[in-house]
Image (tube, rainbow, N blue to C red; front, top):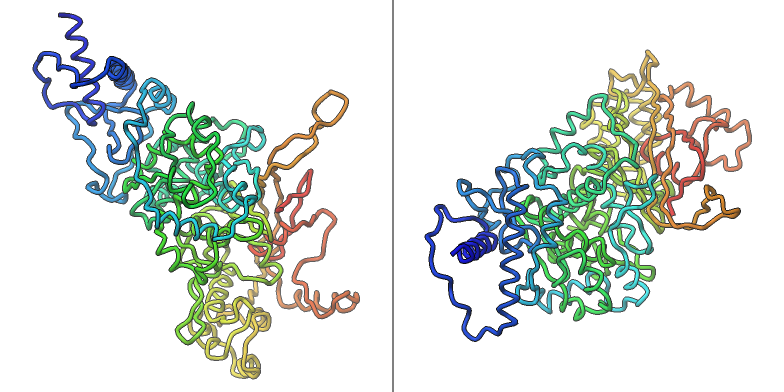
Length: 637
């Protein structure tokens, strides 16, 4: 009798784990059900083995589970950890029937099962994936459309190799433990953007990484208000735990996917049959993805409307995204979360592939999709009306992490205020061929004084009327609108001087503002108390380059592969008065500059200041900034 009772208990535990909740009342004892008709002895043995291990996993998690735990919907959840709520709690329903993420109250970290226990439960719960396939297949036509959108029709094997061999993995070097390592050249746009979001959570949400809904916008708003005080994050990256880094990565992925899904949904793409850490490498061995047909055969997708459910699924399957297909799978997940038709509508030229030829770099559309949720091709604010019903699309609204580019310092584009002034002091940095990350530990680096805020407002109003694509000039009609929007009142003679050429150039407009008293809307401050900024900022380049390891005592240097981080001291001088501005012009003319047609607004170069292309990027955000650092020159390539 004891053996029969124990077996019935194990069977009831299995039913509870598979259905997501226990019955309201204990079921009455009944005879052991017969084996399925025609079941072979081997199949019966496998079935009993699964029942026993499911019961063991269920008992183990009941011992560590919190008082309230909700299982993810069976339709989308992976067979990772079986969490059984007590009888008094209702079972989670299908994601479409739950309330929106904004309506869900944030739970404390204490309500989360530790990730170590989840992983151990995964090992104990053996599931025959062949019998229970998870996720949906892509329709062949959709797979073909997706493939052509990403790679085009003539993608080379070298480009495919870059995107098929790049996982989302953290550096093993203690100095750069918070950073994602890049081994291939193409996916840097995806990795750098994910890295920016990871830093957001590691730096400013480190105490809330156990909360599966910390990426909810309402939670982030409260955290940002807290950090507007004098608090700053720590720079002891070597003390980060693997658990904390993994959770920060999953939170970053959840936030990006829901951002692409307009806050309503997230689509996760994965490889069918790969569900546990010990099977990932073996399952992917020999897998070749060289066409839409190859893609369609192995790709599976799951759709979530709950951030908590998406977090649970990604946390359980993070080894797959750390594998060699991780970067590609996350890009596909982001595109599907947005929707392929919406992606094409976002773009100015949807005929070109998102992965650019011939080097396979992530396009600006991919980076913008991950930054703002739309695959727009430009970096200015809003839309630029070209007339005739045509317009160019830029960044539609505020962003969590921003973007700076070397191309702006070369006058090849104009980054708008949305990307220059993100909610958190973290920026993806673009060069001609690579993406890296710039970040500060203190959000106060973005705070502006009264005159800086005034200049930013005027510049935004001017750029809104600039139809030259960032050329820095506007028509007279647009200039009149700028004056109305910013409450600027010029004397009539000065206004005539500015408008007599038919166009108004920003540099001339700015010089006039420096002479106009701030009571009339200008920038002239009789007190001269303009303020000076000094702060520290960090630059991270995730691409693994060969460096010399001089710490060894083998008698020689050993080349190793590791990413790099650089700490920069930044000093931003106060705003110049008009007299100082003119004095600098005279000084430059008298010294016989090599290019007298170019007026430099930078302060005199001091011996302590250093220069690199990264400094040019920083100056697009903080004009006239002087930078210095120790060690190697920060590289953006």
